[in-house]
Amino acid sequence: MKAVAFVGFKKSGKTVVIEKVAKVLTERGYRVGIAKSMHANFDREGSDTWRFNQIADYVLVKANDTEALLFKNRDLNGFLSMMPDVDFLLLEGFKSIKHVPKIICARNKQDIEELYDELAIAVSGVFANEMEGEVRGLPIINALTKPEALADLIEKRGFILPNIDCHMCGFDCYNMAKLIVKGEKTLKDCVVLSSKPKVTVKIDGKVLPMKDWVQEMVEKTIRGLLSSMKGYREGRIEIKID
Image (cartoon, rainbow, N blue to C red):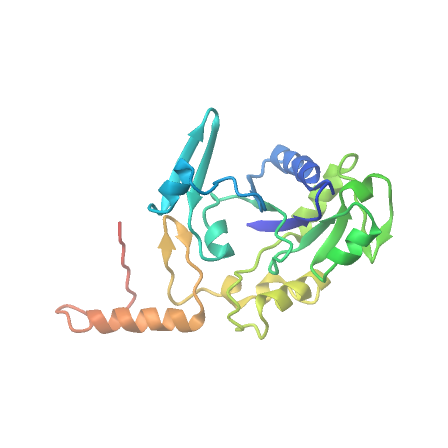
């Protein structure tokens, strides 16, 4: 999966930019997922869905032709793990995210200064509808007239790190992401993504990211439990739980 976060303030054109990019990527045959960060609480306190959500782990809601899944997640990884297998994940909002590259959707230069960090790879949104060239070394891309160019950039530079800060590469995911954006590192430098893990756990087909020490703990615990059983021998162990 490749991912990009479209960050910007209200009325900066984030939704339009994502819509244009998603359309191009879909036309190219990719599977596209979109995740949106909202400040409004659509599951208001006291409502039926709110009451159900206090009890159940998952709540499915169907309203006319719209479906929604409500669930409790402890962190961003848990939230994104609910996304079906996609080629590109487009995030709207998530200004504080630190393990994917960002496209700044700006209304003016002040927005760019406030939102700029070393994860930014381009500027778009309302500001780009009237400006061309570069700002802060970032290309300005008009999503209304050049959505293909923005999709090309995302194809080339989109990525997502595990966001577990294992430090096995020598950095946390935020600093590794900055180095990848600068071109000084690649995804191959992420030990979790590039090396075959010693222990792999999948939940409904999704790999559960685990730090090195967690893998070691799981391995030793399982081998320890099984070693006292008749017929046990050293070797590769497979466990399936339905």
